[in-house]
Image 1 (cartoon, rainbow, N blue to C red):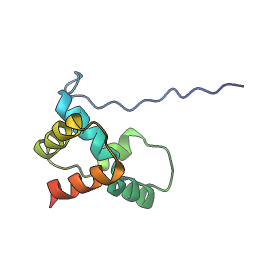
Image 2: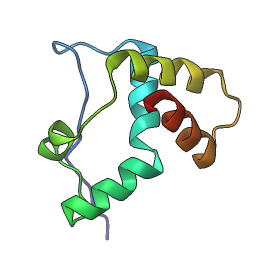
Image 3: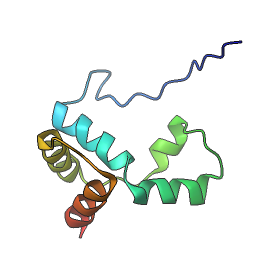
Image 4: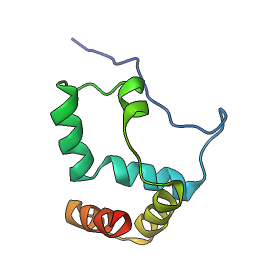
Length: 91
């Protein structure tokens, strides 16, 4: 038996793709422990929908781009590295 998911959340800017640094920064931010813990604490379910994503508080665009530029330069990107970099950017 196979099951397929037909929902996909997409970040875009006026229905166009995002600049690479911003896209990587968003991906890095959404994969931090802080986001995971807050999401689990406040949403009470494992599914992420567009409303959940819209209601989140994000770092500034500049911080996300800086995070993305940094992430793209890493050969290996660990959870600890992501968490440390986010803390430094948002301090």
